[in-house]
Amino acid sequence: MLFHIFQQHIDKALDDLVADGDLPAGLDRKNVTLEPPRDPSHGDLSTNAAMVLSKAAGEKPRDLAEKIVGRLGALDDVKTAEMAGPGFINLRVSDAVLIAELKEIEALGADYGRSNKGQGVTVNVEYVSANPTGPMHMGHCRGAVVGDALADLLEFIGHKVIREYYVNDAGAQVDLLAQSTYLRYMEVLGHKGDFTTEQFPWLESQFKKWEDRENRLYPGDYLVPIANEIADEFGNTFADKPIEAWLQIFRKRSVAGMMDMIRADLALLGIEHDVFSSEAELHEAGKADVAEAELRARDLVYDGVLEKPKGKTIDDWEPVELPLFRSTQFGDDQDRPIKKSNGRWTYFGGDLAYHFQKAQQADELIDIWGADHSGTVKRIKAAVAALTEGKTKFDVKLIQMVRLLRDGEPEKMSKRSGNFVTIADMVEEVGKDAVRFTMLTRKADAQMDFDFAKVTEASRDNPVFYVQYAHARIQSTLRKAAEEENVLPSADHLDKLGAEELDLVKQAAQFPRIVESAAMSREPHRIAFYLNDLAAAFHAFWNMGNDRPEMRIIMVNDPAMTSARLFLAKYLGQVIKNGLALMGVSAADKM
Image 1 (tube, rainbow, N blue to C red):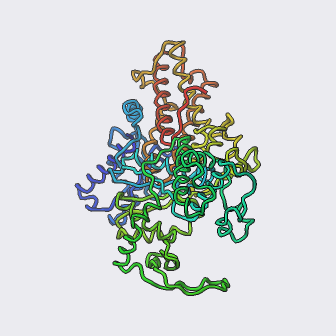
Image 2: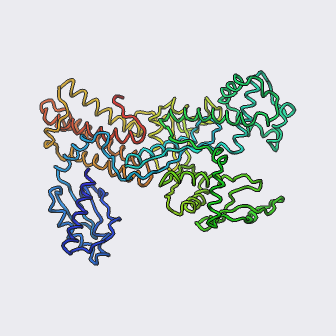
Image 3: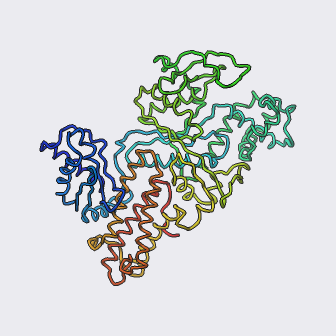
């Protein structure tokens, strides 16, 4: 692949300079880059090798650049090599290299852009991990898509990837879910009307004010099927029984039912996880105790008292001794409790144990979190650093909210839940491809708008349409040439391709570099940006034929040129298809 070939050319040129005594041996080359110049008129590729290495080499950047230019300029693959500015080197590649790259796309097909950059390193990507208390809604969608696309990217560059979902099934919200299911169960058994504290005394203990019940319980109709299953199996066994008689079984059945629903909702987006880890099972297995013991052995957990909250007046506040993690040693602003005063684990304590468990199975950890969890990042990074003694790389990608609009106005209601838009609603209305592509059209940490009207319109302003249309237009052209002109794509006449066509090859040849950079930077949106640019370049080439008949892809009186341009178009389509596949989006053949 072109960029890899020229990286090797640069390394060879530097090695030769070392061998000839013109460059010191052992220089650190990790910051040497090769990329397209910002201004295409400057060339096809640009390297900062002379700028990066000159100081350590004891030379002026331009003097070193002149030596490197001499080496690169002598290569058959290089049309021109020029020094620019303070010491940059700009290269123009030969036509033969570009034609060879086009044939490489043909040879590799769906594997074009794949690499072994990851060297088999195992990466655990945890994403979605929504509380199992209802159907997947829009608040979960962006993180789900970003996490899934990132997992695909990492796998494509040679990592072994574990896709994980952490089921938060140990907290008070699951008790509320079970209680909500119980009320639906009583309805199934024939109970009608309002639920009162006289009938269900346990309800009163759950709320400071009885009126809060509507805000705390889960009213969605999605609990009715679970209640029906329980009623079918147990009849009225639990009717009017105290909460202790049914809470645990209703917890388990409710969580299981919700996870079935969540899996089905994620499947609508083409998302499947390899592992579902239960918080409740983690605690039952004593994993949190193991993590605490490990940290105490390293003097990273101690028993201490938190300071009284500053700027607040809390009448009933009393100092309580708690087990505290020394997170200030790792950049946090205060040490954090891992247990509450009642002995239960804090969220942080549970997360600490969970990440310790994940680190036993992976070399790197990546968490995809909502931006509202930003305050937790520093302390959990500190915990992972401590538990793994810095051996496990850990990154957290924060996902900003998405604002739903319909013709510019906020969209709030859902057919399934009554108070939010579900993923099922979105996919049913606009389709999986529009949802996934749109979620990747901006950096994850930037807020975005999702307008139902705009993501389905057939226009240049709709990126998913614009990219899919480029692929569909290519397929339509291939069909027309075969059916009407009896001409098929062929590599036999690629030497007939001119500057305009070869510019498209240059654009396509960037794909492997973009894939690697998107994976290494953990930024899958780069694929969407690249595909939009490639689609724009192809559409521009197509439109050129409207004004200049000699630039049309199908040349009725020139089958050799037609076959060459069809070959070009077909494998531009292959690159578009490969990029869309990494985003989990289909490549349309017709539109």
